Image 1: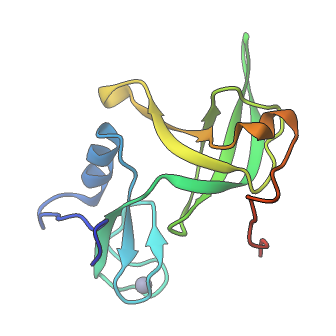
Image 2 (image 1 turned 135 degrees about the horizontal axis):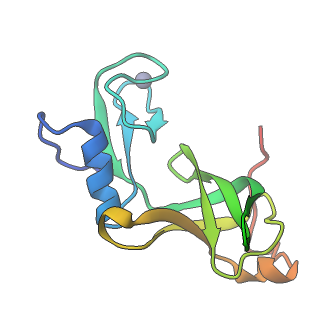
Image 3 (image 1 turned 180 degrees about the vertical axis):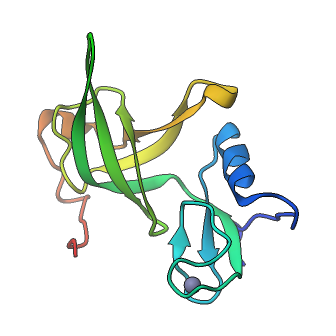
Length: 148
Ligand SMILES: [Zn+2]
């Protein structure tokens, strides 16, 4: 276990633990103790090896965009949804907010956050490197591993 591991009581439902994290502004996930797979959707069994030994951890909330799409809304400008691979290895889709460009480059660094409060809080991502807005890429400081 490392510092990002969380104590969890045996009688807490996995989904509840995830929701409680969101309410605190934390993105929580499970990591399999056997095969190290990271899992966003709360589970009782590892999706890869079937182990029941899963440890809850806190994500840093940082990751990179692996895909994006525009979601039209009636009477409003479209939302940008991004599929993000978090640095811990799991992926999630959520809305991109703040100075949203029409097209988000694959590889752009983003950070998890919340909009709204309490039970109405929703996970979102924000661009870390605002230079993406202007189509510039600081290649000297931003190198990304090749996608599979
Ligand atoms: Zn496993």
